[in-house]
Image 1: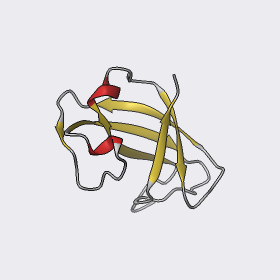
Image 2 (image 1 turned 180 degrees about the vertical axis):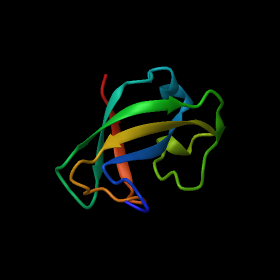
Image 3 (image 1 turned 45 degrees about the horizontal axis):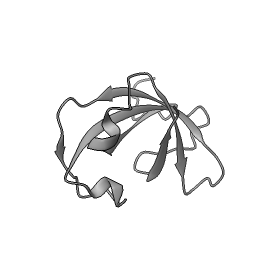
Image 4 (image 1 turned 90 degrees about the vertical axis):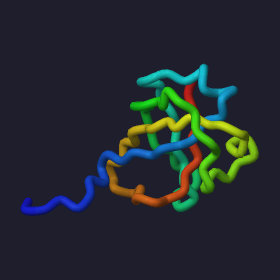
Length: 97
């Protein structure tokens, strides 16, 4: 290929976790991602980065839990072999224990 615009087989999502959940997360932890476009379908994800400093709640957080004073950014890698997920899709993330 001469040019790659996006690799849709491996995407990332950055979520914001409130301080009271921060301690229960670790690198390599698995999670499930769900999007409105595919109800009943879950996509596997893995935590690849956890911020070491908190920040104020970003504007796009829409859950009451996420609207606390400070949050930590967590970046997850999502397996997307069928190319169903697209950049910019809103998603819900559930962490596996």
